Length: 261
Ligand SMILES: [Zn+2]
Image (cartoon, rainbow, N blue to C red; front, side, top):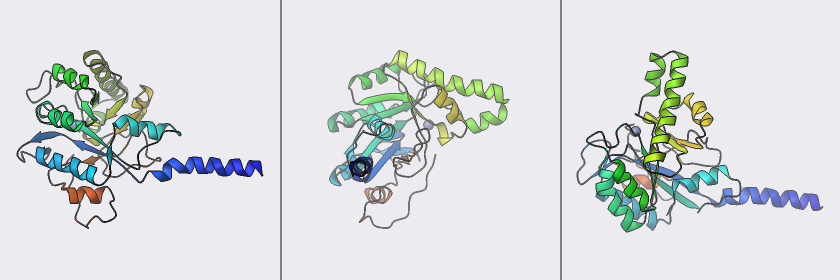
């Protein structure tokens, strides 16, 4: 009798948090502007409309780490409707356009940057800007590899041993640079071009706890930690389309936007 009760309560506890969570998703942005500059740019007004829509529909914008903890720790809980915001590549518009909105709206945001561009490429953020954003307590700065290679191309070009060393350096050096120049702990990774495959093994060996793709789907507790899906946000993603992506029950049926990874 007692054993049966315990088994039932354990089953309930295991099912409880899982069933309570109805929609968990990660969004990924790249660049911000007043105008629709290119396929990877989202207008500031569109981003603000996304945030407004999420709040009106009862979503909580949570730090990405909170979703990762929910995936990794059986006892961890998450609001029923949770969305995390991420921004890849470290474009200068993240400081100029996104930072003021993040501060005004108190938005937790994870930045995935590749250090070879930082304080180097004309379009990129500087280490000083990254430190300033990190100091707000809103921004988590994480790895997008060292110089954003296409692992599929490099794998074809190199011997297996060379590729192993190459990928290891890409994942390791990126983390070392971000930790030493910005601070914080780097254990999350966004796959350049969404390419991961066998490189996941190296990420795991190096102690990365979560890595993110560009696969357009929501998460559940069975999502693979080193290939977690994210919805690519482009200018065409209106709140109506966002509603549909997130599986809102009354979302009108509209065609999904084309993805441009
Ligand atoms: Zn990228």
